[in-house]
Length: 364
Image (cartoon, rainbow, N blue to C red; front, side, top):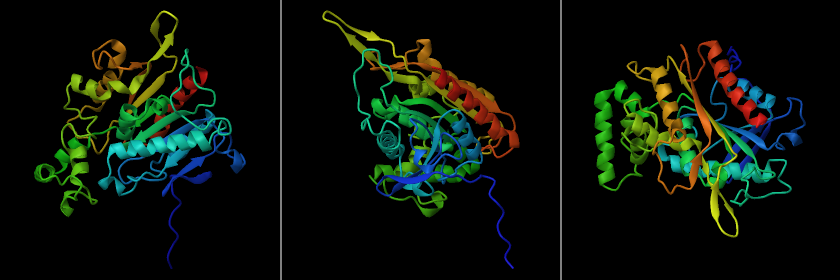
């Protein structure tokens, strides 16, 4: 007799499953009450998008149910997308592709799954002298776990301003370095595979797959270098970067568009009224972080790099069309593992900190 499998500790979810682009689905759970009728699930203009790490898809983390409850409390729905890079698809993907698909998702949510859908069908740039939030415009909270953190940081760097500026909260849970983890696990294999990927780059074979032993899923030379080479596209959080190098990679996360007010005689730049709150949450006992790394110190350095734009440091071009507004804060959860499944209190602590940011957004 085969005994039934145990009930998943990740919880169960009730909501709407829909296609936001051909072949790509997302799941949205309710934002008002657990007993809300299905037709009302999508009527909220406040959306929290949960992004998992490598190999993740739906319900990527053990605190997902707790996060949904937090979203409901603060008037947000929770959206779990399937990207082309979900599950094992990351091996042939890039952060640029992830960003493109996130833009598609957010524009779809704005157009078809918000209470403003009947009155607005675009998120393109408009001009308003006071730069106040457009009537009917969605507000987004992005929560990333592991590689989901890289997706968020990259999105805030390259996404169109009209979409990027709708992100009011970004939470990075376990923003670890794939490169540093790879170097520690098997240094000889790491060096051999890195050399092979660089050789394939020289041979113009970036989109060809690496030898099977290079990674635990089929992976192109391009994605291998993005993840494992110093300065690769995914290499945002490595502890061996200087403070200046971290600032160059992270200071953009608080940036919004500048706005201008035009009169008959002058054109002046006005301050934005939008704010973005960023939470960096590191695990004190993350199994993917080398033992030599001081996680509390690294948390502080990442936060400092993100806030560097607020301190007047020269981290952007003088003619930049963006300006910083908001604040990054950090927590390091003692004894917590990578996905906050242990200790039992770890997921709760992270979600409680995120809840404070959602509450602050509602009070603006």
